[in-house]
Length: 257
Image (cartoon, rainbow, N blue to C red; front, side):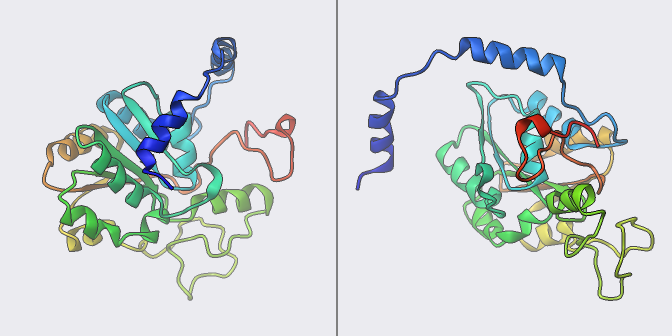
């Protein structure tokens, strides 16, 4: 057993950095040849939101939850010595984002800390909002709200002929059993995150339009007394691409759907 910081410092001294310059150069060429974008979708997208984060938060730590929000963040976030990312990778730990952001802010008090989460993942550890308030941490909590468990919905759309089950957060018992998520006649999504933020004494902002993104982030940056929750309403059927179906090889990657 050892103090984590001391142990990591010792291990880092023993790490030999490999020569990866040629590999990085090859990857950069692939990015130019096969750019990833969300141009097929109308209105506000995760790509647009994250690119605003790149523009406005130069000295920051971005923490992700799990799901589509996490995958979009790894695709569009620009990282360097001043902007870092913390993510749980492929472990599928929904609810990781908020408590990890609290830890990131405590460890990096001089950096902006932004948590990117989905409307499903945020609710997994929502009680930690009370911790952030108690510690007066000026976190910026971004919720990409598509009214569903987006990653599961995407797989069922692409590979299971839209046989959706237990993914829609607007679902009610009275809904049509074979609903295809058309949003026709749907009840309001659940929960109302602005009311939830208010119940924790957290500043809440809802963003529906692209032109309101910058203003929301500016308000969040100005709030130094505690967390700010920004809820971005995005399209339900926006998908993460490319994707590799389970059990398939890299040569079977789906680039378009």
